[in-house]
Length: 386
Ligand code: F0G
Image 1 (cartoon, rainbow, N blue to C red):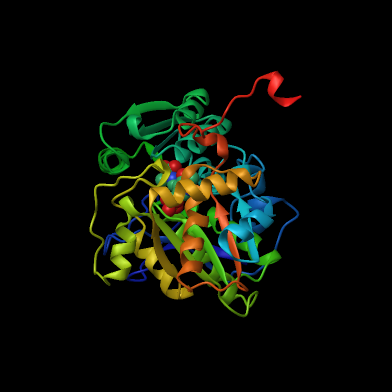
Image 2: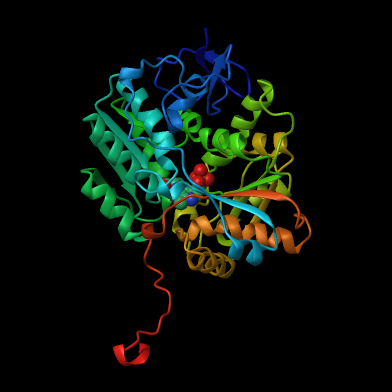
């Protein structure tokens, strides 16, 4: 039988999953969920919970709070192959999840866990997508949600979602990093809240399933994605470690974590081989990844090391250009998501990716998540078209 513990990736200390504290008492690191005697066994459920045995083996099926997330579409597009100069490039569209981003995959697991632990309130800081998912899944479970949002740095569409789903909105002066500090202070002072940021290791377990799904269908050389608070970077490496350890895959694709140039502390940390991350004042049009002090950087480093991966950064202009290409291909995504393709193009141009390589790029959020950058268009008159 598989069973799970919380385990410190740094010192190895283990804790029972029934405790609601996700940092190590001994060394302060963020804990992992660790599954003993894990087997690659899928269920008859769809999406995230198809992989229940590798995500949360012990939770009873009737306690799962789900909106049918996961099992997202993998696109191919001649236009994007032409744009990137890569024949075999695939885009996995996480914007097609119920609240329009990959966050739903982690949220179904974290909220199910909040219910198992009998919490009545949830809390998160967010650049928008986490708050939309947190608000939706909390409402579905019948519990109250509180979201700390840097109002001036969040797209109106995402805020609209959180408000509509009934979240209590805490407006934070400043940016995401200030909101994240607010969450950390709140959980030091009270035990009432179940925290839904990606420092919650159950979110990471849910997000691993993006990789499980990709590896069932493809044999990619590279997997690219935008990187902000580094939850996905952490989750994707962990998923590949699982598959390799279980003998499901016999090689490891390289992860490519892509940051915006004005919000690239992880890029600096890896490339300068620093001991600790140096926080920056984040600046980018891609508000979803406008994060200067990412919490998951140590787990993310483990992922890059395990996969011999790459950390790249792209300018706002490169993001805007890539977004235009993805939108015009008929697929569409929010600005931050386009970093996935912008980074691949940059690495193709520098020769790190070959034309013949197979690449899977993750589009993290839906086109309608952020309509602040209306593309230029020329309205026609009826008399112009016939
Ligand atoms: N793409 C989108 C659309 C996002 O919303 C986020 C993160 C990321 C990429 C980066 O993922 O944090 O795992 O490195 N959004 C968070 C939020 C921070 O609050 O919605 P990450």
